[in-house]
Image 1: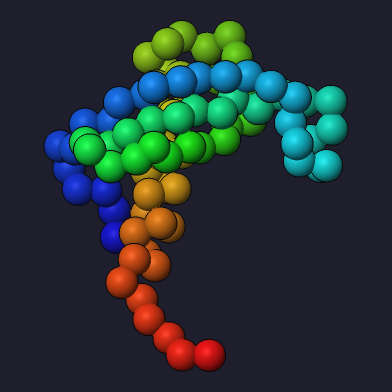
Image 2 (image 1 turned 60 degrees about the horizontal axis):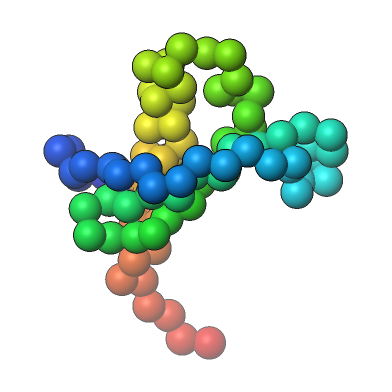
Length: 84
């Protein structure tokens, strides 16, 4: 399920920090906190090398791609029920 078209994404914070992923030792990640309408906060982590040095318009397209992917996965599980 993809994000509904026309819903405004509001980026509230953008931080770059050393990656916590053992496979990315010595590299940096961008942690982005955002809201979609009144929903949130949500966060998404992006390898910083995908953003670094690129024009802002391209950076926003990359961020949009990561947020859409994360939301698609999140929405896939909403409403699912099961018994253990």
